Length: 204
Length: 204
DNA sequence: CGGAATCCTCTTCGATACTG
DNA sequence: CAGTATCGAAGAGGATTCCG
Image 1 (cartoon, rainbow over the protein chains, first blue to last red):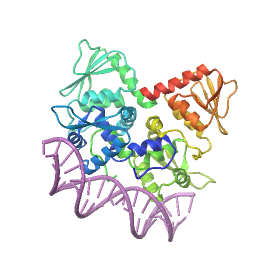
Image 2: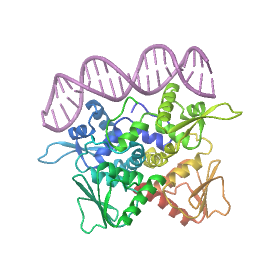
Image 3: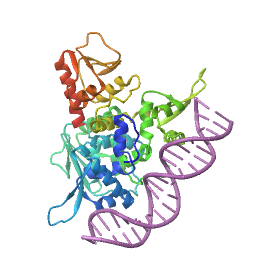
Image 4: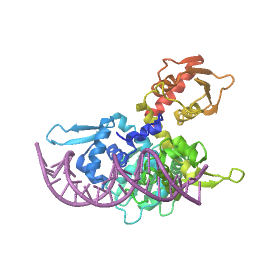
């Protein structure tokens, strides 16, 4: 790395490692699991190929990302986070919590990738401790929260089933607003969940 | 801002706001309180003045920083974080926790600004809940931790008094190592504190 | 086809000098 | 004190090309 802040400070040092453009978004993608170079480039959607290659090189040199050659028959290489790299999860959660407030609800033109709901749910409730089971239905997506852990798809005997659209889901978890949200079952449990998430966003 | 990631994602949006070089370090400085332009430039130590001006302009436009003209007799302007800007604290704490691990202990050549110890202590125990009172003595610095809140200077009847140098302080809180650390009083309470901090670093 | 390296343009950065 | 102006160097963005 040629450009460093030259400060003895953990924040400055962290930014020396992952503060360059695209680096944290690469980490965000790799948190979901290993990815090939091309898939990474696709999902980041807009990163120049030379920049992606340069970032991966630096991240690998700093022990944040590891390059692994798949055994057989795949015959391709994947990039994955090291243990230290996975330590970026709370950083990304904190950024997401902070950014969500000013992001605003999604417009109708936003198209979400498959599986977005469970990711969004995981990010939202990351630091909140919640009891009970909840099933969320947004568009064709299904994801559930069972005693604090995320489950893809529905769940039997959920305490509450929450059905809404992406904008309603946003308002529910970011503002605590229930407009456009249909709740079946224990709406008080949901209210407690929302409050826990909201408190987290405010406190943590 | 002319350069955005164009993604509907809270992380990408957060980085659109504070992902540019120097922005988060500006926020870090302003977390301690309002600062004048020149003091900000001094403490960031190396930021080009045009870049600092540009960052402040963007941060202000996005409601993260506010510019305020001091009433009298000071006749100068200060920059301070808005409420939304103060929401970056957990982001900076998360970055600091993550960065500390690979930062390594300070060398003898590092010179710390006055008051660094209480800041470092606050960052280290940010998310840990701790009981008891501890007084830390590092060089000429004194800072204390009383039932989870930071106090500048010493404290009476501390459960434990911890005396060490900056490198020992680093190892104590980052690695949980006690080499070069002298403890008077309840060393078990200190061990619990260190464990809480370490768990936090690993989990959160 | 996956995984880049190259070329080119444009913007930004860093350093210094200068001004209301 | 609080910035703006200037300028060379570095990095980003976009398209294309190359290699196994």
